Image (cartoon, one colour):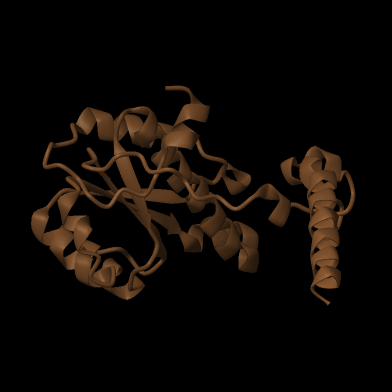
Length: 210
């Protein structure tokens, strides 16, 4: 599967089979995660592989009772060494640590998809509970928990908002320039013509009814 297929096929899976994920496959995924962009090439990310049933059950509580977590044979917890990043970038270090751990997490999702696995990025969790359950030191922050396994679901059709609603040119909010590049823009003349025709018909019907 090429990268574009992986991007297209990736989805947030919340139902897994009980088929185990081999360690070789997990480390193959982490190999690609480890190639993510990094501020100053500091590579502050750290990974925790969780397979223990009790740990997963505890993490369900930390993740606002998202029960499907226990179905996944593997959890990958993506952490960032925040203090190490701040040594080099001071106050901006927190933002950079979050950014590169997000890049790592996206690599995990795409690599998993490319290797025939399903995944889900979990960001809703109680940080202190996760740190306590996994014995994460104070200077390290958990930023994402990724479920990994073989899906029971079919790949859903994605409901994506049109680029026309969220793409601007040169300044935020400016969607008037180069409209011809966007899919919606190509249909604007037809839409205007249809609207005008409909308006004319309504006016004529109104006149006839008098």
